[in-house]
Length: 401
Image (cartoon, rainbow, N blue to C red; front, side, top):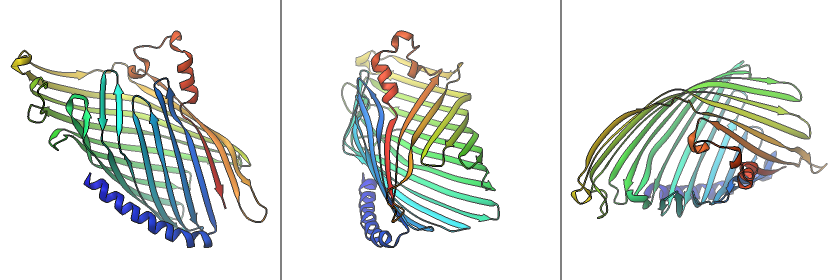
């Protein structure tokens, strides 16, 4: 947890500096806003997951400072945890050049999870990120470059029999985008992750490496009271994982294997599309967002080899297989956002209020983990209907001056 503790100390110093800097910014700023957002992420008979966030932002037409914070609260059996998060952000935006810098961290003190007969816990974790984005424009052409980097580590944990914990060395996401006439854009992204599974003595149990590449085209159509933003793209993701368990890194008597080695790899090609319609530029507004993800091609392989201890029978076995996803999974989502935008609170200044509700629907197909092998009409009981109606529902409020 050395990274997390040093990151937290640095961030606390930055928060102190930020609030000192924010006061004169508030006094002299052209605008200042306070926002609050809360909602349900998921709810059913096993528990509820919700979130609460707040933020402050001050600045003028070219410079701004912002602070965001909040927490996720869950008492669900799948994940019983309180997860606070914080972010600082600052930026400058001119006519032909702009830059944004931000950083933040997330942490928790204790986590418990139960998945069927399996249970695991963690004594705490923390991670942080830094983000930088800049753009420049020449006449109708704008170029944007951004970079995101994060890492996280965990205290001692109990991943059921593994007695282990994850460790994320880095997550890196660079992005390059070209936009013409503020209507057409082409974006290229990459994603890199390197992680490991460690035991509580810091010995390595397994590794994970992920690489992903994405190309996307989008366009924007606008009228006085309506706008339509659409995009579609292609995503390639490749992953490699391997692990080795033995009595040396699983130091307890009941560990049944003399050795257990496993490895796997996967390559996925996914097509997707997004559509966002913003209706109403006056007091009342509604935003409808929809997305589609569909697996197009896959190549997933895994293998393992093990030998049991003599006390547990001494059996030895090996297997190497390729997973055939005959039915390609996918899903669509729909996000509805409606409310009052920029309601004037005072005739003497520009104070305004924005409030609204959001609701997210997700419909998957060919995904057994969601359907449980098939959903019949009798499965739609009151608890299921309540989960569908309330999960993904949120309320937000924002005051601007």
